[in-house]
Image 1 (cartoon, one colour):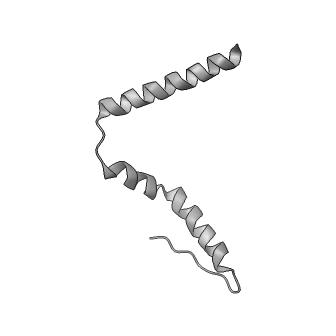
Image 2 (cartoon, rainbow, N blue to C red):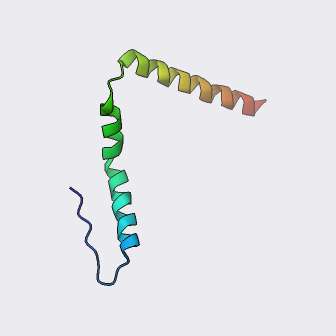
Length: 64
């Protein structure tokens, strides 16, 4: 559980911004999204290979 102490006279928007930053750093949202549905390891591997190929194509185009 995240606890964000609010200082005297602090704006609630600023406190919310600190909460959001802390929440993003925990990685909880990302882990929940990955656990939402099961993805086979072969599909994950294929996606990483395709991503690497795409990045390599972009780098090759920059060289030309």
